[in-house]
Length: 215
Ligand code: B16
Ligand code: MG
Image (cartoon, rainbow, N blue to C red; front, side, top):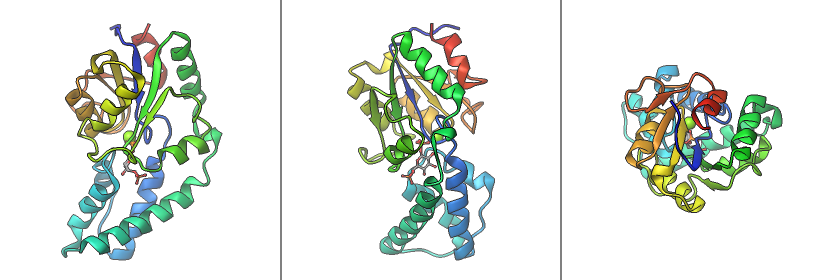
């Protein structure tokens, strides 16, 4: 299959780098402190979902309700632990395959963007040395509705100045694949629960395979 596209929008956590393991560790620490059961399967439901919505999913297992203020404090506690883990990231955390593929796509004339639900996206891109690679970044600080809503991808397309149908989106989350489809974009699934979720247009076997799809 060959796609006719002008732009590629990349999810960040789980696609450009593997911060998903740090999200898991930070949520696991919080859940442990609260005595709430948490495992990899529950963690998979948090991919691409906003911080508050993630907390709500975790607290489903708590058997009690929390006030808005309590939840804000818990989300802040998790984010502090998560940011500590992010500080340990470096350019070595962006795989050579990712860098090389981004460079090759750029050389072919594609516009490149990030579309992430994360409010930490700017910090992460800086840590891994990819902040200069993109024509636009749309992230959790600029949207009101998280994936599966298409808002973040539509914002990325608008920043690039291209129509949604001219964009391919690369995602590791089912929620992200759903968001891409809802925005009228072509959804490419890589890793995570995105592959085989049933809503994707194509399952990628590797990041590099993008170079076969996008001539
Ligand atoms: P933060 P993505 C998402 O990023 C993560 O997949 C998701 O697990 C996280 O809850 C969300 O960002 C919010 O992150 O707490 O850093 O604002 O996959 O859309 O790049
Ligand atoms: Mg992701």
